[in-house]
Image (cartoon, rainbow, N blue to C red; front, top):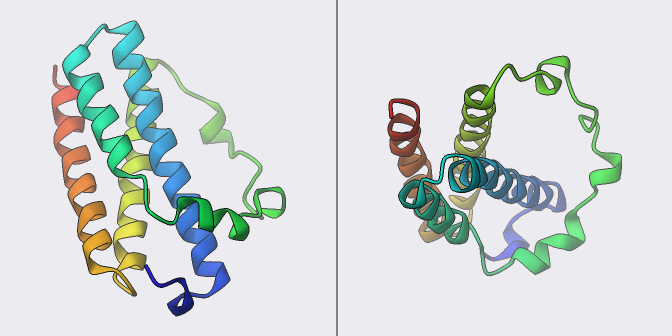
Length: 134
């Protein structure tokens, strides 16, 4: 992506959502890998997480400002999970939402990357069904 086409604020949004996407996937991946011993689903999630790596990941670091993030404090709903299924659902939703943000923002400068994040989002929808209905 040509970073000249986006403001520092939008590049910060991209950086935050790349992190959020990979973190959400990783939480579910680790639960399926270590708690459920589900190698197949864990591998699918790992593959998606690796697809989320972009060419400009390192370059985006200059726009990160996590210390001053106005929504840094957790909400009460983020602090409460009733069971592992609730954790899985919350993290799949987090990953899906982040991939949607990335899909939209990359439309401004890199349609190929936009399509990649759209593909990741739809695969997350499929995996959500597979994981939760298993």
